[in-house]
Length: 268
Ligand SMILES: C[S@@+](CC[C@H](N)C(=O)[O-])C[C@H]1O[C@@H](n2cnc3c(N)ncnc32)[C@H](O)[C@@H]1O
Image (cartoon, rainbow, N blue to C red; front, side):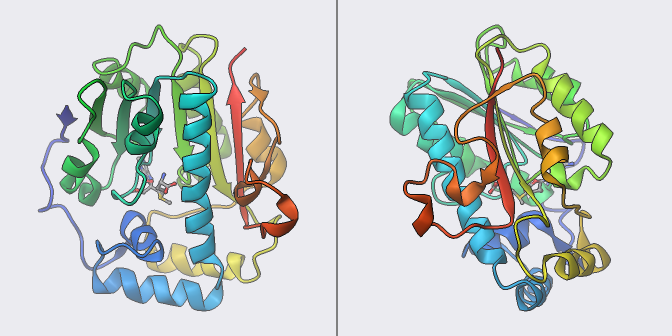
């Protein structure tokens, strides 16, 4: 199921300004980007050399969290908001590898992601995948549309990886999370990653300032306590709020931290 927006890609794709979905894909080693994305991506890497590591650590966290939820916890439904361009180990591939009947709905507001959504819709025959073109700032619409593919009376894992950082107002970001989680039943989970200036990453602040002057959408970092507030009312799974590279990644001494918090909370 694809729910397109009012106009269809690729006519809305802007090639004159760097877009986050495409630059993220560039940092991950993908092939879906324009010269403007590579120029900005390289400038950011020059200022903040570990950005590629952050992107890879974030995707590896996604894999571990989804494997845990689909396997150990038996969660069969995923709502992945701020999906990004298709890459290796997309949420439905990881989930359906463990649980072939898993149902996954993707949400993004970038027209380039919509243009590539077909690759996200290759479900196993037992499961289902859907794509909604929507803004994370419209959580009611997201839930309404997701309800066509997911049974919202059963537990859902809401995944917001590297996306709340594009909602610049922290109270608005909290309200989005509450609106998404409130109607979902006990046993639902919230999976989060978010950039921070509190875990090192020299050059991160300068790079974010450069990003905000030269690319879209604008981004913000958040403190541990702001990140923790998104998980209010949820039981945060072990090991708590950590660098996403160190979330259940084995012996932490050998895993370098990245400046990106990761955590998973369970609705009691
Ligand atoms: C940093 S990428 C993260 C992609 C993926 N979640 C991951 O962790 O690899 C952020 C994604 O969020 C999308 N995005 C940014 N702001 C958004 C918004 N307001 N509503 C929906 N999607 C948004 C971007 O288009 C991009 O694809």
